Image 1 (cartoon, rainbow, N blue to C red):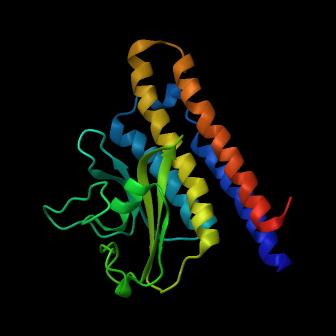
Image 2: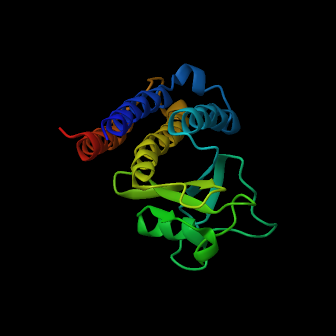
Amino acid sequence: DVTDLKRTELLVEEIDLAGGDLLDLDPDTINPLDVGARLRLIEDKVIRTIRTVIGFEHFEVRLVDRKNGQLELVMGSGMEPLSIGERLFASRTENGISGMVATSGEAYLCRDTREDPMYVVGIPDALSSLTVPLKLRDRVVGVLNVESSQTNAFDERDQMLVELYGRYVAMAINILDMLVVERYTTNHSFSSTALGEMNQPLESITRNAAELRAGYVGD
């Protein structure tokens, strides 16, 4: 369908633009902010893009704690918090879909939560979910989980679009971390190390966008 192909192409372009805006982090603006304010700055942009560009209302982003493997909630919209004392870890078993995705590095489509034993409650009436890994190079740094009150709400195109934007989300959060270090080590905006860290993920994002276009709209 020509209309559907054109829409996919436009969505990819909009995600590229939104991703570029997400990475447009001015150190002079970011550095005076505390950690919570930095995350809110990113969260506002992510919520806006996921709602208005990709078209989903309920989502959460969890990052992997390198020390213990726990999946820490850092931002989200419309999701239920875990029960008191309940925690999620990057593990293939007993930690739901998010734990498995964080371990495998592979996205997971849950088409009907009622028939999937891996699913852990996110929104009270969730009937389907889409969970993608957040990657920097080949390292999984977290997961982005989207949920719907309808069954089969997500398809393979949604998966690739969310994965593409997830690359930008992972990079933006990583840049915030690097800026914290930069604040105490140099007066320059970015060190050569930080620029090196950014280069390969940016190239990967470019490749992903090209592959997405080719897969849906042709070369």
